[in-house]
Image (cartoon, rainbow, N blue to C red; front, top):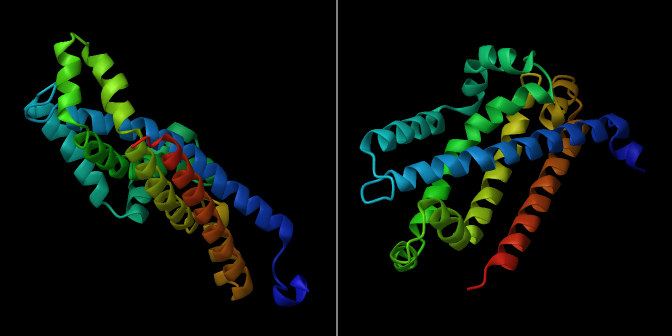
Length: 222
């Protein structure tokens, strides 16, 4: 039945492409989480009135975030080809897409982290400071802990954006469902392949959204 509906779809090839999309997404989400939290913390802590108030540091970090958020992802991939080749030893395949995915998504998530930190009750921060808590303790025990539900929600939004980025990266040979839909579907006019790839990408998005929402609800004690 399925072979009649989708005559050009090879299950084994679809499984491989789905694995590559999940690989790129999961690795880049992990990298984005680390770099995004660091960027968000620096933006929050170095702002006027922050624990590490520093105008120059804040300006440089904000400039980095704004510049990389403004560059369209497809152009960013091309700009990073020399860096990717140096770092990964190749500019093709799922592994080669990881640096561009992280650098493209981390500034976006960094802004979401900054917004989440700004929502933390200032009274709680002041209480921790009055008790002699170190800055590192305030960051880990107050800022990150209190903003955790918002951080998870922001990461979910970022992960879904990254799934879309992997599809774009596929157009220039990064592998995954985007690559398969373009080279083996669109270019050959096999639109059943494009359709199945689209359905699989949508399913992956739904799974990430469901898991992210479930985790956010479980840790939100308000």
